[in-house]
Image (cartoon, one colour):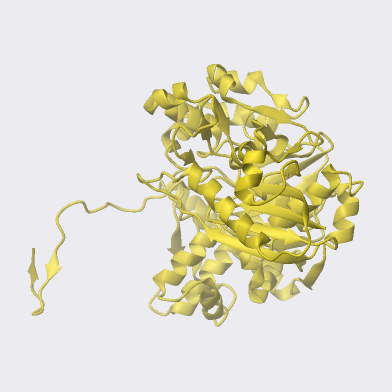
Length: 508
């Protein structure tokens, strides 16, 4: 018997089938489009996402010998996937990476609202969270809010299409509205953000044991599966990935080297102390919390650098980068390239990237190395913000395929790193969650011990670790200077272009 899992990512949707030993036996992928109709916006067509799910499921089931007995899924988190009272989208989904509410966030930060909310539930609002998007829509598109009955996440949208149930799980509900002591929405947080009237948009929060329903006849017909199969809503993707790499017990940690560089540590209680940073995700009811720092800058930075240096992609960028030495011969890179700024391990919608210390002596290899060094120091920054002792950092996501980067992260953080033997870790986390929710396994701890397999590990080199410890202090100093200067990026030309003639003159 097989388990079908679905992972609804931001740019790729995957369907993965596991056998009863927890081995991936079939994978189907389909790219999805992020719509950017205005600067800083990030949206998706909700029906197109559902169609992509149907396509990958049908593809992965084609020729499958063993019947599927369980469907379990995970998806990107945050955002606002608004539907009407009949479950139809009232417009495109607004994604977690959307930056339209940046000015609003800056005002909340200045007024102390963001810190007050963090001290309450341990999650720092970013521009792509529902409270920011509700407030923006109330000011700029009130008609859409009026036409909407429920604000789902990507996982909630998929659960609705698969089972007809309109709900969310505790991980998706954690930021920004969840009261971790009750497992329900906190009226104080709603009032703090002036969103009491938006309570009607929030779906029912399902507890850890409640996120299971039956596949409807309509959905079964679209997918080519029997109606009535159990469907499990797993935690959203970063939490499911932590489970997939075996990070389930207090003190365990992982970093996802993907669209987001997300560092996560399991704790027994939420942490609302220190500088407000990151989020606290309900991970197993009220017994476990995942302290997470999901950045806005990750793999897209590598893609940008590859294009800048006229390379085919990140693998070739890595090959070039590690021809340079640690520290890129004095070149430091602040990797804050997202138009929405940065959200973890610090929040600043104005954050912008820059190279520091550049000279005529620097080569393309140095630029590439500085990019990898900078992203690795972001992981160190997240571990520092977590203020939790860990003995190992498990790595996953596309970036973990690079042995050289895994070794660099060990040096840059001073913590041993390890890589999973699986490739689809979000799907693997959904697989484990599905087994526990259906009673096929008695606990997440036992399921992880049984099915998670690590492939390789790296120890920090003492000399390099000391070097990166000093470089990290320089990195923070450069960042403070950039922030004090207002993250300025210069004036933008909006006039007519100047054209150079073949003789070297100019014309228009």
